[in-house]
Image (cartoon, rainbow, N blue to C red):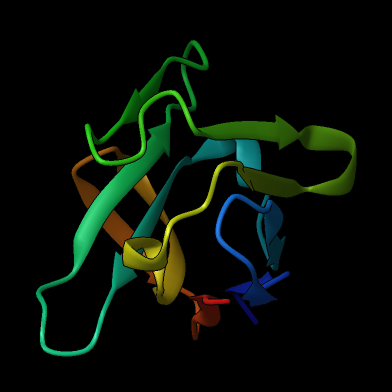
Length: 118
């Protein structure tokens, strides 16, 4: 069964950090571009980061640039999203997706909740 599963969400205070994981099963993650998205209540889904399969190049939305870092661990078939200096406006459900490129996604996870609050 082909799937991606996110984990690592939770409640964190403003200024804190979390690391989200995107684990793949049924396929090799480094054959695909991996994107991270988030959706807050009442807002559209936002693509916040992507790492390509070809050369490992990365993309970050302006809203997270300088605070979030995407990385791969091919041995663990996992992609991470390190989130630092978290703000209340980062509160959302975070999703990872695997695709043929950073604009076309084939497999989506179920999401993990991140809440930034004091």
